[in-house]
Length: 240
View 1 (spheres, helix red, strand yellow):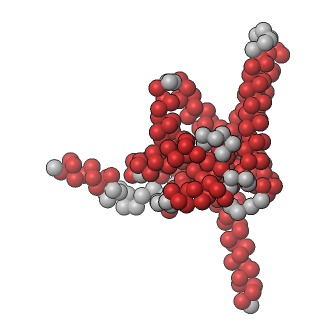
View 2 (cartoon, one colour):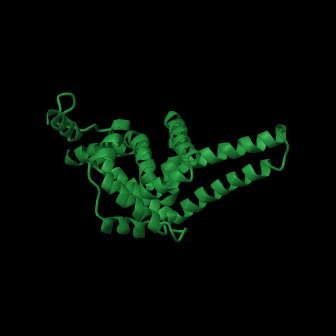
View 3 (cartoon, helix red, strand yellow):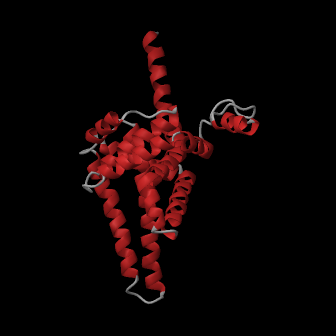
């Protein structure tokens, strides 16, 4: 009974080492994964259903990010009605960004296929290397893009400009994001087809939760923080 009590205290965060749940990082991801497994499964399956028409994938990804970033930052998500509201609001707005991201991923795949037509020489290796570079740059671009689209009420052009700046300025985080996506999908493909069931059940929400953990501090530090500080200064000036 004592062991069971200690386990439940740990599970609910009621222990001497940590009174409050972790606020950021991989520990926050683990906390959410343990305590909100049902929510992650439900939102993952809803995301998969919304992706079925294919052209709705960008809007579904934006709505998923909106749900997960709120869950990550506050500890609770919103309802399925709010998910569909976010989905409908971003349906048309997200399509241009989805076309750019999807087009670049298809081009990277084309380069992979093209490199197979060459023997193991310099040209084949060069084309394959360019394809790999484009693929990972596009993956990072998509990670930033659809998270910013979920967090900020900006135009498509502003989203694009901010993403390009953040990728370059926050290059350590960009590299870490690319490495995280590579490791995640390497494990998924290495154990395929058994892992495909995991993707349908919880995989996409887990992947995006990791993205939220990596990029949330960047967005807070580079965009939200300066914006709130500017508003505070403007309010003080107006009061004076």
